[in-house]
Image (cartoon, rainbow, N blue to C red; front, side):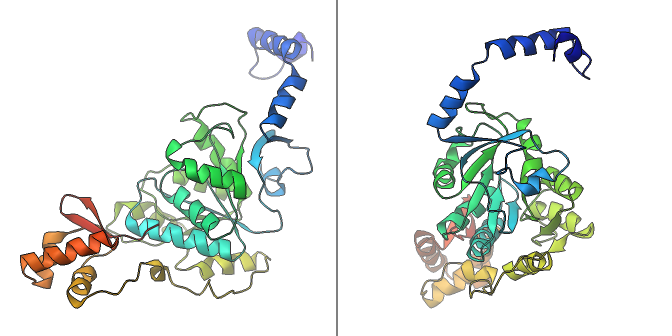
Length: 336
């Protein structure tokens, strides 16, 4: 297109048209392609046969994808497991459970590689020997957040990282709401583990609903701030998942063939650590749960002498059974 034709396009002024023509004449496509090849980044435009079919059939798919590693297998069902960054121990346990059990059932586990629910679910899926894929809000060769560099390396080696942003593009706050449409488009189900009333997670949910995807939620306590978003989604018609079989049943209804493999019948709470405990330790441990609780409150409930209680509490913490979340407050440590 010449300058006059470019200026007829909506949103383009003379300066924009001049810039496009300048870049067209100065950009070395061959050199850039060679850079991608050397960095093992695949460039997949929408008309390529490798472009994900689920995403292609959405209303707002990106022109092209940059991929490190693999793309999700088309014939396998895909579930996006998403939720709060600052999740509770209950959320950690659920993310670990669903990430692991879904992958063992042959499901592609997708998420955004964020701290919290996203990363926990993806790491659990990969450690179980399954497949997981991260949709990034930066270039595929950029690890963000850096705290998840171990997960990033695992995704590149055992799954894949996907982005519409090219190499070296840094993460930006406005990239993430946009990338959520890709995460939603690649999924058959979006599973929300924990979400506040106002949460970025709900942006993904809205985009998934626009594309006709099923939304499922993990129920939580009505008094817990991290469960408010899930409860509101439930009230709006989202399906409830209390174990992995609930998710697999919805996938089967979509036509996917998924057989029970012995893993899928396990309960969420079976993921908790089990160690032989003395009676005093068992009594103290039973007083705590997956939401933080005051040690003083538990000591009053158990009616144990102070020194005996502290001794049991310390041993439970050293064994990784309990974790201190704040001064004098503890939760059961799920290890997720």
